[in-house]
Image (cartoon, rainbow, N blue to C red; front, top):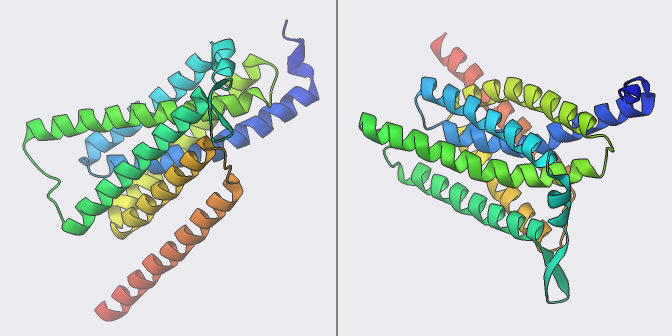
Length: 242
């Protein structure tokens, strides 16, 4: 039953799928990092744990209903010579949600709205953050698992790849959240990433696929420039104090 464990091709597919899941998880990390940054440190840590745990649960749950999941790619209706499926509808809805959320957060940042409040407001804010993480987890989980189905034949390989990817995402998300909290200007950059991801999801749902490599290169380049700016400001601050 476990003969596939000794097959080198299976291990190759596991490594490939794990890397792919980690790359696809970048979108999730960016969203969770931005959305929890407005919470107190202790709550932010708890929300990050809950968010990534839910992402893992959703992915494994979807893997257990592969036949239903594959059905999501079946044409639902045709509009303007494009056959829309449930997957397309989910991607478009998720993209619109990201556009709305990122625009709302950018507006709050520019207007300088107070993010504090009473303990009751903080609890409600925590609940709202978890609810939003659940929504976007579902969107990213569907897209991630549908992609995984085409790359591996054994469900054990898919589950192992998802678990390994989520462990890496959990480890990586901590420094990202901390960096955004220490350097508020980077939050605007992360929100612009969410706008970019939202547009890409909508385009994908409409049948215009944008290679993720282009998007991730743009994100990496912008993040690299921002890191250089942060280091330059730090060095200038040290020079002024000396």
